[in-house]
Length: 214
Image (cartoon, rainbow, N blue to C red; front, side):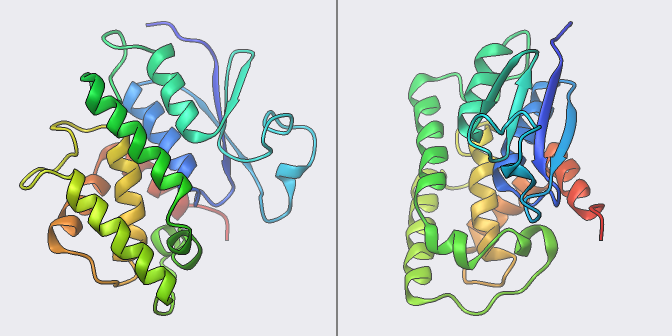
């Protein structure tokens, strides 16, 4: 199958949960792509000369030939439509209600739970850093995340919708912010997140963060 030229821009450490989402989507689709890094710590994303500068100046950014797009959930949805099943692998559920639920979960994880994102940054997940106990607000956010995850994950299932979707990767990452730091998470959610984390596309991204300079 022929495909256009695709480039994904990532943070230099490969710590971004949003880059993870797009990277996994590309790998699951079976798409070939070039990976470029932007050093956020040095402010490289705020300087002209890279594709994302004229958009949000954030990673991930994706170019497909001359089309450039930012924001990970928008990129994931674009990839599903641009490289549509059955020619390319599916990353969202076929059922329309399940697909809407997957997008809801993605949007919620990106717009809510700020105390978790602040107190449990992804250097815990990808860098092995340990953080102190959650604040009161952090604990409330963790309880909210756990309640939602238990509500949407069917009992006895390893995927949200009967088969893997990109929302599984995104939810597992958020849970692992807590799990990898030793916070209290129900066992079935730990098992779910561990199962999702072993997916080959996820492991390939983890390998990138492990090989980062320094």
